[in-house]
Amino acid sequence: MAKNTLDQKMQQIVSLCRRRAFIFQSSEIYGGLNGCWDYGPLGVELKRNIKAAWWRDMVTERQDIEGVDCSILMNPKVWEASGHASSFTDPMVDCMQCRGRFRADHIVKNQCPTCGTKDKFTEVRLFNLMFKTYVGALEDSSSQTYLRPETAQGIFVNFDNVVNTCRVKVPFGIAQIGKAFRNEINPRNFTFRSREFEQMEMEFFVKPDLEEANKWFEYWKQERYQWYLKYGIKQERLHLRPHEENELAHYAAGCADIEYDFPFGRAELEGIANRTDYDLKRHSEVSGKDLKYFDAEAKTHYVPYVIEPSAGADRATLAFLVDAYEEEPENERTVLRFHPAIAPIKVAVFPLVNKEGMPELAEKLTKTLKKKWHSFYDDKGAIGRRYRRQDEVGTPFCLTVDGETMKSNTVTVRQRDSMAQERVAVDQVVGYLEKQLTGI
Ligand code: ATP
Image (cartoon, rainbow, N blue to C red; front, side, top):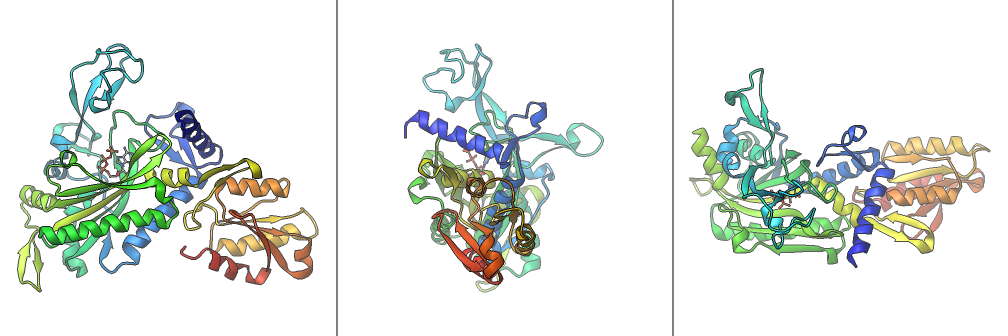
């Protein structure tokens, strides 16, 4: 697609997100706050469904992964040990003409991306991406800590707690979903690069043996790639890209990104890395606590290697939105073709007319459905308009209570994608939808 068309597509998605209560600017009435976003009533459902799908697939349905939910504020020593305090930095330059600030590695041909001026940049300076804050009443260096820039470190510092309380055996994983904060120099592309975002991370501990670690590295690359396909991402837009040698973090033995073709270009959704024993060893050194694992079968103590799939919940949400978005002028509609498991509303119920007992019956049906799924009652406007409104937010099923319902106790069920309609008995609607919405 040409660049203009792609820009236009992104603009349409951003505008749909605002209009239909998916995503708003943070503190909008005050002019917003760069790099921060609020999820509205439909956006919060979508994002919660995505996180729930991740948790179900990564924790609930597995025997070998436990979950945790750690604090955002941690002892500052954590960030000393992990290396973030000294080296979680981006090289940065300022344009002396327009005062714009950019990542030095994003500058092409020494030209300012905002005003176009050439060769007028400051020296490269390193900029730490962590947000500083103070714990307690005193604002001095002894009370200074950071908002966590990743959730992974909470997992590493709880490694021993989980091992000692949960009877886990290597290979096993610990998973966490939670907020992370990075003072990105250039937040952009809607929610893609934000300053406050959510991560879905899992640390999978394996024997400290390169062959064993590589086996699990391959396994998690495939598992995670398949996960996006399972919830509907189109394969031709999803890529698994191994890192070049010079891209690898100094402690990583291997890394691959799962990338998606957004309208603004191909960009990272998730990274899968072999972090070796770097983190646990560093925490042992700095905390003085021995974080070796005792392998009862092999009767040896060792520090495990770790394979980490690290995904962003907001980037995943944006990818699912972009991927689901379709304009169908021939049907006079815009449709979000969400997989039913992540659709914010699963079913909408309409009384055809606001009389003859139809609204009462439709409301009663909505109440029953709401016990199982996020359902929505709508009695406003022409029926065709009501269908279009649900198509635009990705609702997979619409039920209409009409004249026939009052005679034969059946409703019209209309499918979002095919727009096909069929009649289903009122007392069988729940079973019917259950079958259609399997996997939820
Ligand atoms: P990038 O190169 O895009 O800055 P990264 O390689 O620094 O990302 P990681 O540190 O590997 O990212 O973080 C893991 C995941 O967390 C990313 O794949 C992404 O989904 C998410 N993530 C990281 N930074 C941001 C951000 N600023 N906004 C939204 N999500 C983010």
